[in-house]
Length: 141
Image 1 (tube, rainbow, N blue to C red):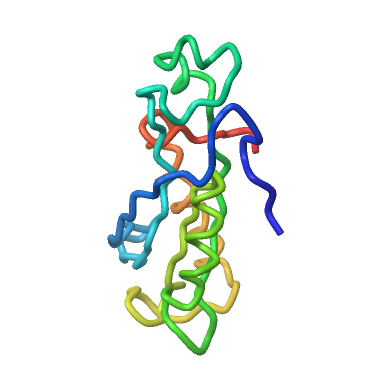
Image 2 (cartoon, helix red, strand yellow; image 1 turned 180 degrees about the vertical axis):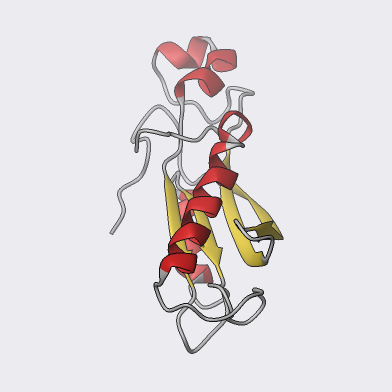
C-alpha cells in the first residue's frame, strides 16, 4: 500500500483532476491514458498548522508528487484499476494508467514487454516530465 505523500503539511485527501487523452509514443502511435493529478489548494484552507500555514503561496514550490505508471491487464482496458488510481491520487501520487501498445484504445501491435513497449514507457515518462512544473512532479521519487 502506498503511503500518503507528502505526510504533511497538507490535509488529505487531495482533489483530483482527471485527464483522458492519447499520448504520442516514439513512433507516433497514440497510447490511450487516463491520468489522475492531485491538485494543490494554495488558498490556505487545506494547509495544516506549520510554517506553510502562514505562506500558502509557497506551497507549490515545496510540495511535489511522485508518479506511478500502470498498464492495463489483458482482460480489461485502462478502467480496470480506476478505484486504486483514485485512492493513490487522493493521497498525493500522479497516477498514469494506460493501455499498452496494441491493446484496447492504443495503436500499434502488441509487443508484450518487448523493445517497443519499453520505448513507450520512456515516452510516457517524458510526457509527464514535460509537465513537471504544472503538475508538481517529484522527479526524484
